[in-house]
Structures are given as C-alpha cells and as structure tokens.
Length: 150
Image (tube, rainbow, N blue to C red):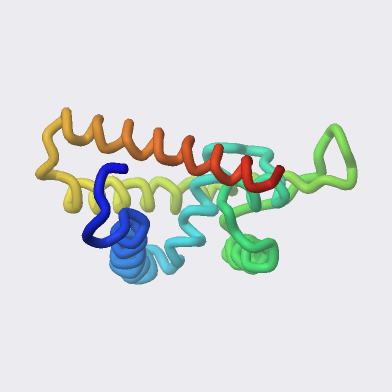
C-alpha cells in the first residue's frame, strides 16, 4: 500500500472528473449545442462505425435508457443515422451523418483545446507517464471487477 493517509485516490479522480465534466459540458453546450455525454457518444460512433447500441452500453458504461435518450437526441438533430446490419436484420448499426462528421470535427478542436488548457504545463514525459498510469489503472480495475463477477 502506497499511503494510508489523506484522501483516497478514487475521491481525487472523481473530483477531477466532476469538475472537468461540468466545465466542458458548459462549453460544448454553448459552442455546439450538445452535452458532453452526447459529444462522447458522437465520438464513439465516429471511432466505431457500425457500432450497435448494445456495444455502446458496454464501451461507454452507461445505463441503456440514458444511452437511448442520447441516441434519440443525436438522431433528431440529424447527426447520426441507423442502418440495419447486413449480417443480422434484427440489429441496428449507428453511423455519423455528414452533419455529424462536421460536429465531430468541431468537438475535436474544442476537446483538444480544453485538454491543452488543462494539461499544457505537463512535460511530454509527464503526459506519457500519466497516460501509462491511467491505462494500467483501467486494466487493474477491469480485472478487479471481473474477479467480483465470479
């Protein structure tokens, strides 16, 4: 164990997450008209064309009802579309529309700018170490969760 005093690491991570999400959410809503969660959904659909809503639930760690609501918002705004899978007619695959691609590009510019504001003072080595540590933490938490399911 590294430390037995002070705030738990999970508390610090949650605090960072909450503050960053609130700040970014305001900016995305003002500049693009979408919430951060909707932007993240758009990013996943961009990164995984033909993804299904079921696969998104697992990747985004979101409640199915909340995900459905966010998908409906993006569809209504004409940013994503559904197509029936060529492999299984019961499955709907999600894609970005042309407008969705444009909004995704805007969101990337904003997101990279926000990341630079937040982490711009990190050296390249600190940045790489942070990512490596977080990747390792994700892996360890996933293993821990898997062990609880047994």
